[in-house]
Amino acid sequence: MLTIKDILETKAIEGIKIVAGEQGIHNKISLVNIIENPDAFDWLTPNELLLTTGYIFQDDEELQNRIIKEISKINCSGLVIKMRRYLQKTPQNMIDTANKYGLPLLELPYNYTLSKVISIINEKASGDYDLINRKSLDMHNTLFKVALEGGGIKSISTKLAETINNPIIFFDKDWNLLHYTELDDNPIPLDYVVNLNNHRQTFSKDFINSIPKDLNEMQKSITRMYYFEDFSVKCRILPVAVANYIYGYIVIWQTIRDLTEFDYLVLEQASTIVALERIKQKEIEEVRLKIKQEFFDDLLTGRITSSETLQTLCDLHGLYPNKKYYCIVLSVFTDKLDEHQDLISRKYESDNLAKKCIKLIHEHSNTINGEITCLYRNNQIIILVSQNDDKQDISVVETKLYAENILELLTQHINQSSFLIGIGKEYKNIRFLHKSFSEAHEALRLMHRFHERGAVAHFADHSIYHFLDSNVPEEKLKDFFLESLGTLFEYDQLHSTSYLLTLENYFINHMNISETAKEMFIHRNTLIYRIDKIKEILKTDFKSYEELLQIQLALRIYRLIGKSFDKDDFTG
Image (cartoon, rainbow, N blue to C red; front, side, top):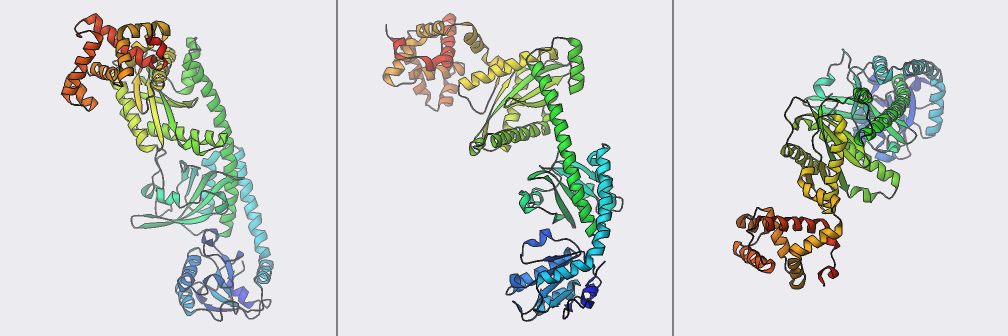
């Protein structure tokens, strides 16, 4: 391969000379590039010979030293400065730094253009390129064969790690771990420095946030240093992308040896093959998801009537037909979607939000007495909770406590969002799960109707509302309310009082004066006055059991249909 020494000896570039870093005179040259951008270090690769006019660092001593240091760390071949354009002589500090790092620093006569020098060197290096290209083509065919034979990312990763002689880690586009290949010669083992648990982030947030999100900023591999305790590891990161879409990332744990030009060609080819593999897996997963979705649609609507069919489908999708189940349905309300005008981007954001919620729920599944299955369906998150049939039935209090833990968890981690959680009853067999699902939806419907946000409700909490709303015509409900509490409602309307609300809080707090006053933030004597006034308006003493039952039913009717009352209901 062409070296710095060969360039100095070529007659095609007369007058080129080395002024520092002579110890690197045998550095190999695989590529020639121009560096006129101080932020271009991410795009540089080992064995590149860099040419510059010196414009970017002519008056910046700190940048001059930084450039020498950075390209030396990347193992570039050397730096060639065209003289007398912006620099009359090479700065002494650059010479000292180049000598310190052993980086060849060359001066190019003014009469040569950078493009001419690139042409001369590329012509001399063309023979080496042909050899590298033949080797990389062979490796491409090998990796492609592995993919065609169904080896998947695991086999590709193993072959790739062996070829470049460094450990490899594969991630999806959200930096979730897909696979990794460790090597025995790795002096800094992966499992000691990073987290290789599939359910936790492998790298720190700071490290991930340093990676460009836009593919236009990451067309080639980039270098990042990963620090842990007293260790520092050079990581080379490639996007796994097709067109403008990133499907994931390949991270090379560069601890065994530096990467060569051949390694970089192989990695780029592997990136394309892995992208195709991710596309294939995505399509397979979409088919599986569709089949699974159809099963859950049938299960949650009660359309599966055959025990044999139910058993087969449950086995296929990891459910237990003979366990007890209940259903939790979670509605998400977020302001984030308002930022997206496009329907596709809104759908993408909504799906990502649901995935984040489901991931959080799974991570905290140990807080429930039972196994959970989560799915996303019709803009709702559905949680199926199962437990063995020999265990005691889960109480309403237990189910609500678990749901409240979920609510607190999601509220803490999901910004600009609120949640409603409905819970159905537990049933002895999965064939009746559709009933629990329907009940959870009914609890949600009433919370929507009552305009509640950030709330949890069990179907049993609203049993009287379910009965009233589904079995009694609205006109009958109005008549019942007017007969029981119509005078109090009319008094509130005429005098701008809130006696109806006071009465509702009084019954919610079990007719306890102290608790009701505390709940309403009013003085105890004020509440006593209001209760006496209510008794006067209703002409009652709150001592008759039948009368108390009638009043409480009327209060629930008002909460259910109060907004539908108008002035005509109180004339006559």
